Image (tube, rainbow, N blue to C red; front, side):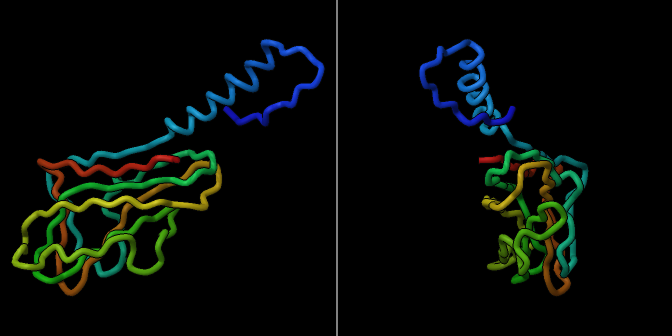
Length: 168
């Protein structure tokens, strides 16, 4: 439902049609924006992994579509990730409509395998505010990369990563 600019009354009666248009319908429009969200919870029989040194999609299931009203979108992820080698970073980025939202090394870089935590699963959580989107359908996809012969993985067999987007 679209927003209708409020009417300025002057010497005319207020009708039920006016109330429906300017009060009920506009409140429905505001509520629709609050309810506008999309999410994905990942499960499977084997961990996801990559050794790529260029950003690649984490998984097709970590791709969500959201039709927005033109507002900012808050995007978040929480999951458990590990690194096969010590002192090797993993980078996480977000693609919005097929384009990296951050053109450099992404949203997050973490040294998951540092301090003797090689092959130890550790939590990873972030949120990012996506601004400047036009009203319409948008696709959000998580991407990742690592460096120097490292293999990073996300546990999905007994733990279940969550990826979500909500229009503000």
